[in-house]
Image (cartoon, rainbow over all chains, first blue to last red; front, side, top):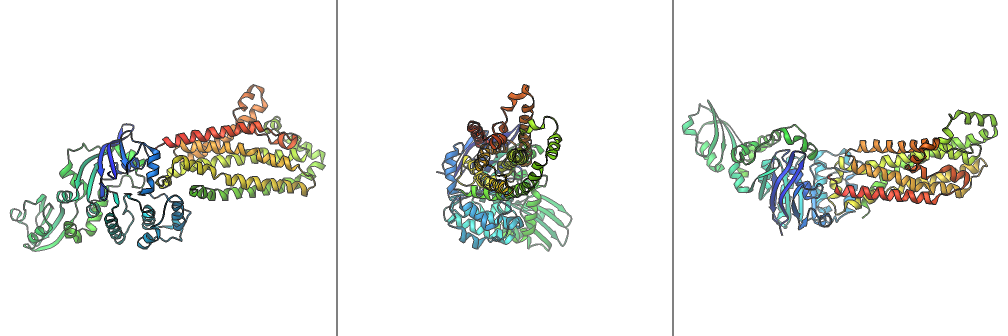
Length: 339
Length: 263
């Protein structure tokens, strides 16, 4: 029995399809990435899986429980953990009291162990928490009952890079222990780092279900090279480079080959500056998934305004994707390629 | 599995204690006023005249010259029936709507608890304000009446509180129903406040005009008469049963709607 199986899951709000015929399977013991820009419908899917909203049509089974069968789904929640994108804790409670509150409804056998890894200030009221502390408290509550299956919606939001690494390692250990993770994110690089398989959602529909390796090959690296002398385009450009733009002594391109080959190629030239980063999600969509679905305009923003309240509306998802990749991109070029 | 109940009850405690404080203040005020007022026929007439015509009927006030009638009018007709009723409806209207709005409900329902269970625990938490108010206020009234040497029958004091419980539960039911149907916490609360106030007004108006008497039957306060209990020692148990039934219907409707609701 897979952890999750959805069949034609659809949710419409008036004319707008927040989820349109979404079908995928999450196998036991894998980290499944659910990747898509803000407003694509990721949270809508999650909310249907957890029984918060009813599908307009289609169905899904979570750990064998049909989402239409409220009683069965409620019972299965002993084995399900959830880290929402917006963490609605009781603000006037301390972190400790929040965990006690959840412990009143389910097991908390792993609480102490988790609190050694993720350390929110338990004796302080949640209203004084930073977003990172909030997220850590959310992680602890999501895993403290040692669930078989954990749904994580934008789990790294608010975490500093060190804590993000800690979370990544923790999730890999959980996978080793046979746990299944549903990892929803709009950040390509973190999905690439941690997930085994990825479902890509755009405008409410699944555009691709891929092994992470093939996504890595497809996505490539965004490379900017500044050379000491003007570029000889014919000599410089190889078959692995696409979207090449040459500006006198600078070249921008997307590299689809092996990192090692790229580095060997670059050392032949006298370079002033090299920046290797992850491409923007939209770039990947443009290259590989164009035509899979008709991109809609602002249409579903309104729906997702209610759907994903934690995400600032109107802010561009790519800003964050870009921000991540330029921040740690150059150092990460080889690392993520070697995964 | 009483985590939600305990959490909700803790949140209701400060409001309940504030209301107890308010009643303590007004008890002191009215019990200290009464002896002077009762001994002065002119002052009494002045107060009765001060009520615009119809006001006595509107509030169901009788026998203002007795301590029972006086306290019933001053303490119960307005403060208990309207103010406490509004408090119960207003705060219960926020319970579900507020949690849905703040996304707290997502975390709650990610636990192995059903929506019916959540609603039941939230409703059950009102046992705390009901107990706090219905224990402390009757004690204050009894002690107050003894202190000024105008003792009120303790049985009727107990009954005026006991029989108000179904009425206050109906106010909770109104709040819960609005809480699962109205999307925003603030809107649900203001609507609940307006609903209880309007029902109370309708009941008052129906006392004035026999043409509108039937309208009174649709209001919860019609089934709770503090004056009948305190002044005449008439205890309308059947009316209390009607209110309990109304609460049950409101609660079941709210539960049914909540289980179907997209949160």
